[in-house]
Picture 1 (cartoon, rainbow, N blue to C red):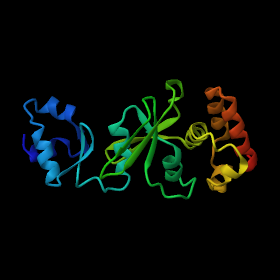
Picture 2 (picture 1 turned 45 degrees about the horizontal axis):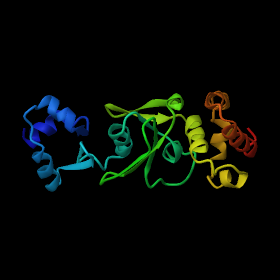
Picture 3 (picture 1 turned 90 degrees about the vertical axis):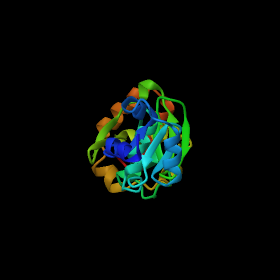
Picture 4 (picture 1 turned 180 degrees about the horizontal axis):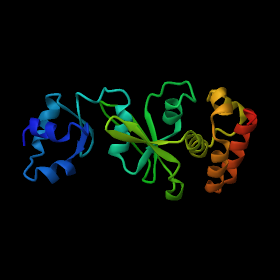
Length: 204
């Protein structure tokens, strides 16, 4: 298989795995990947996963890659909150949650961080359109709960204030009913207390 054959087959995906290549080109030599990477044609994302150099800098493409290289997972926490404009900080890494073990990957596309969550808490995300692909992204309500659950030091008024939530969004757009329903699903009294501090702070 030549590079052009690989590109023509997988460019619409933007990224590919060695498993996908072997399924289409059973006589494929892994040495090609090393050579293409050395020539700057592809980027190694993690063991067995690659992206085409020409697409890795596209806006939000790193979000798609986050889903792609570690499954099952969905974008959440600070990255999802910044995506919705709920917090002002520019994120320096892509944060996600997964029912798999906690993991981190750093490559030329981005830095990816995954926090483990129990399988029965792996819910509350949607498929966001991204060109001819989709991105699994937490709803605003679930992103807030994931944050308060996985980062328990957000347990005081001042700590939550430091996140600088957009007050207009919290008061006018956040689905309080969905937030309450999701909290009940966690069955976690400490989380419920942190959510109470959050809702009292913003008077919602």
